Length: 392
Ligand SMILES: Cc1cc2nc3c(=O)[nH]c(=O)nc-3n(C[C@H](O)[C@H](O)[C@H](O)COP(=O)(O)OP(=O)(O)OC[C@H]3O[C@@H](n4cnc5c(N)ncnc54)[C@H](O)[C@@H]3O)c2cc1C
Image (cartoon, rainbow, N blue to C red; front, side, top):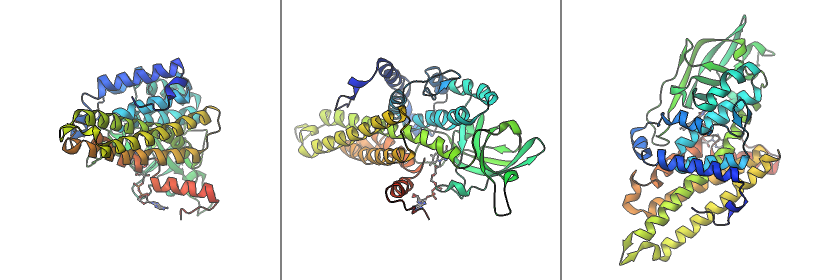
């Protein structure tokens, strides 16, 4: 497995164990069927509790059943899952970084006790509702709102492109709290609501037309006069820093995960090039093919280094969201470009689901777009580097 500068040597026993567990899980449970799932547009839902049992959901959190593993261990886990499929890593990212993290960071004691153990073991599935049909890159303009009525809130609005919404038990819904609005121009602060999906007025239609991230369930969340008790509000945060801090956690995992997808493409291409014979010998003997492998290995290695550095910064609480933007932007672009090169090296076989590169390539179109598009991360970096915001 590609580890050109020996990063393995610096891993702890626990980190190796977690990585090896995830790698074995992917080899045994995911690789044999993931191509079929991708073709069928299904997710292997039977693996959800198994992934929970193995500690794949937010193991970097502390308490409520989470073992508080190192940020490197968490990153390696994301890397191995995405080497299997971006849909698999998305499952773990959403459940862990986008649902368990906000409950852990901003939830009441009752909310933590009610949800974290079940989400951690995969007995319950969560989803994260931020994006709306008219507000993707700029979620701060969201129209979903909550209004207080006695000791309840009434929610109205719609969310779209929500990973796992059709199979979720609970949705973290971000909405404007109109009852806390200051004046007539103010829509109120953004707040997080824990909404059980079986409440009256909640719909979660599946989006089935995807050509990317097909082995992942994506849907909408419709909210029509949905009543939730006051105790459903995440009490510890208001404003856009709530959802944005969750996204920083998930993007950290993506920066690692994308390297896994690229590594899987590289290994597939390397093996194929040494096996496949044309013009009287393996295609790996051609300089043109070697150049591709050399470039791929170099790009993957530099992205790995960035991911490892992020882990060090996160571990000592020096990680800034802009660091994560740089890594998400760079590593996903790298994986997207290198998966294409790997696909090319496999010739006609490369366009089938018998090999992973084209599936990764298709998936990475989503990864390039969600959790802040490549463009939006460019603007975040641009603002950090110049002090000038260029979003509007
Ligand atoms: C499979 C999948 C799963 C997803 N899962 C979730 C989920 O679980 N929860 C959730 O809340 N969301 C989820 N998303 C939504 C995702 O985060 C959004 O698609 C993303 O934020 C982009 O929003 P948009 O699609 O509305 O594109 P738009 O914001 O409309 O952008 C369209 C294009 O315009 C560009 N653009 C926008 N603004 C600017 C600007 N200021 N300057 C330059 N260019 C700009 C963008 O980069 C992009 O190329 C998911 C998306 C997909 C595809």
